[in-house]
Length: 209
Image 1 (cartoon, rainbow, N blue to C red):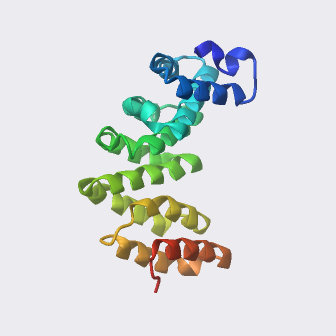
Image 2 (cartoon, one colour):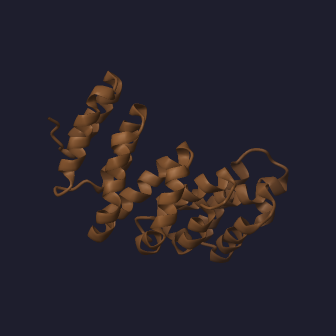
């Protein structure tokens, strides 16, 4: 399967990687996926980058097919390769709702990557936290404060998108803290940003003050 990666084919685009992900999903080729996961440890950065692309493309189509590799994805978060870091966090965001136990066990490493991460890493971290929060009350106790603190402090332009990512875990018990933080950020938001928030809160049945 490694030979089918874009870099191995002399390609500079992602289409071969996407096609490989589709093939592995359609054939449910577990050995092929395992080979691609093994490629994350290669010294060749191009191979590593292509492998993580294939894996999160698989996750976008069928997350359960890569759920067994949560530990491998978390281990990638300590890499010096930013492409690998945000790609791994993307994969974790896709599987967190299905493999929440193994993902939660590595929460400190995920939080560390979130705290020092790039924009894409942070974006997907919020999705990871939200899926964990949704999965189990004990997980919620650990990750909800992180999300609320983030919504309080992040750049105004990030509030709508990150609220959308966090919204999957909103329930009748925690809706109040989300409402409060959205109210506190209102003065920072432009009319279009506030409109985006209003659209989602209406959809969720949340009444803002």
